[in-house]
Structures are given as C-alpha cells and as structure tokens.
Length: 134
Image 1 (cartoon, rainbow, N blue to C red):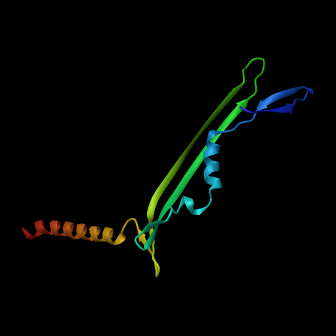
Image 2 (image 1 turned 90 degrees about the horizontal axis):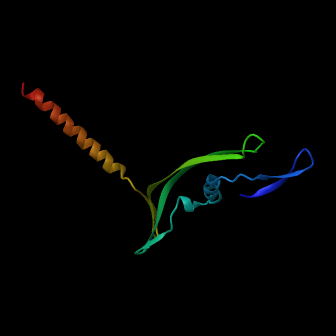
Image 3 (image 1 turned 90 degrees about the vertical axis):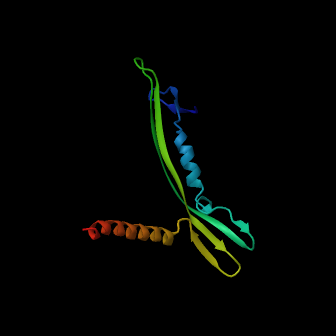
C-alpha cells in the first residue's frame, strides 16, 4: 500500500495510506475504452463479403471502503468491498458487400411471430374440440 506524508497539527509528520480499490481498476478499463470495440467486433471476411458482429454491452460497478487511523486504544482498521455486473448480448451482424450493407438480427422476429401464431391457433383448435363434442 502506498503511503503519503501528511502534516499533523503538532508539526510532526505521519504517514497515511492512500486507498486504492480493486473495483476502480475494472471501472477504469471500461471507462478508458469508450470506442466502438466494446460493441462492434472485428470484421470477418467471408467469400466476397465482410461480416461485422454487433453486441449490446452493459456494465455496472460499485465499491467502497474506509480507513480509520489508529489511536492509543484502537488499532488501524481498513475495509473495502465492491461488486459489479457485466452483460454482453449479441444483437446481430452487419453483412457488408460491394453494393449494399444489410443488418441481420441474431433473433429473427418473423420466426418468433410465426411460432406464437402457430401456438395460438393450435391452442384455439384444442379448446374448440370440447365444445364440438356436446
């Protein structure tokens, strides 16, 4: 732990540790890298096209700590804690060719809507059978 000299009120010198949380290092990494490399991946060459992956990145970090100087009756005490959450969700890819750029989502919404529609109609048909047997 680093120490820094501070002037005491009685004109004597004392040392006080400088607090550095490990969570701060993680947060600084994400804070310094504010470019698109967190969201867009490296382009991949495929046949005569380039494919550029796209993701959504969420991160939350927090931490805290404390330091109490010692006295005659109590020793020096220090404590720290922290936590965080990092989430990376693939959104899709950009397909780049010589004549156009097309976005292809990772989850095909048309397919999901078709599945929901088929399930709804299937459920409706199953529910109507008991009424037809009366």
